[in-house]
Length: 385
Ligand SMILES: *Cc1c(COP(=O)(O)O)cnc(C)c1O
Image (cartoon, rainbow, N blue to C red):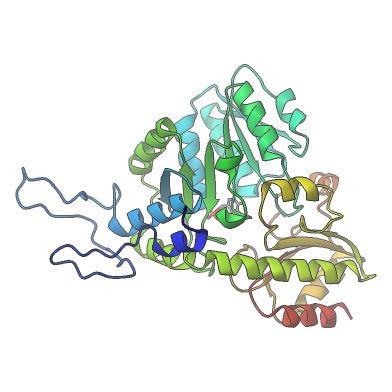
């Protein structure tokens, strides 16, 4: 029988070392050494030479992360965007074309549109909630599709199986950014994706105290290219952040369950309020893509958005009244956060584009933490009054 998710999260990559002289740590130590000695210049190393190339703490994390997605290979980077950049550098070359979801994480969009465009990699953005839109955007020079599901802050869902079929048909690489659901709720490799990327800064780390990114995959050719550039470019995760991420990953399952419980409870509470225009959460039966979400995930995650009646000032006022939700960007930590995309995470998107896409001035995004559900609801009830 295959061992379960939490068992892997706790044990994989961290088997105690019982060899003579080893201390049998149950938690992998933080190996800060940047270089590793050998007996003589000509003798073999113990597998480690220099920390950029391989570090024991990072290696433990890479094994754990691969196991969570049921993947053959895992690689850890200094941030989610470092992981994304290394994928692009490794799998694309000048002249190639990328098809991206039009509601991609802003930093990924900035990377593709403002940075890699200078290296003659072009990008088209389409509404990937309709898989045919991706097929229509395929050009002879297309090489890669980059999607997220659900997206941010509108919680749109892409049908990953349908998009994987289109990718196969046209010989394109499908990359899925799975940050929002984590491997606990969604395993894109099982749905046909070729490469999965994470900002481990969010749910996998889970405590808002360690920046990081990862790539997991089964394809050996892509793995070798990305691993080569992990070392060649050098955007690796530090030993200390590897340790924090290992520590966070062990409790991913229990945290995700509570994040989801709180997000659903808040979404249901908000739906009943006359002061709320609409609530966006894929776990609600009235979400336009609830059925697709349910068919490809085992849960709906901890992020929801909603639109308040009124003006930007009312939205700001609402956030200022909340006691348990810090007003902050980011998501996926144990503490609840609230933000106004129009003036925070998505402020750089032109107002017309924002409004056309449905990001109004009173849209509020919530990252539900793992506090007691009743307390979060009570905080909302008071702030709405
Ligand atoms: C935060 C985030 C990223 C970028 O990750 P960093 O760790 O901040 O570099 C990429 N994708 C998604 C969906 C994110 O939420």
